Length: 106
Image (cartoon, rainbow, N blue to C red; front, side, top):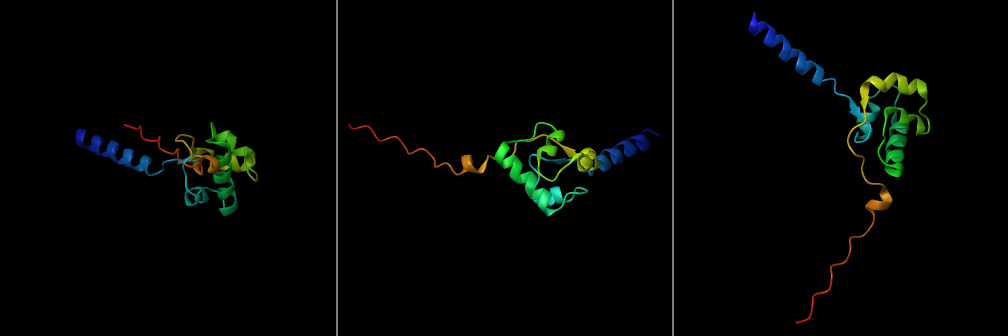
């Protein structure tokens, strides 16, 4: 009986991990497009928004993205999470590295 319960618990753990939420702060365009109601244009808008404004703090922040309203958010809310940090904004990423300090004379 213990083996059966352990087997069921293990199977349940693997099954729930297969339905992992999409992190809107780190998701690729393809991962975002897999969400119900999010097509290529909305996925790109989400990525553009987070690159310009930084990571989303809550799932509700998605309504700040052009084209995403409460109805769309309600459809996908159970499938998304807000976790990891988004990529640095494009302006910050394009910043050149500091030049090395000149060598001291002997």
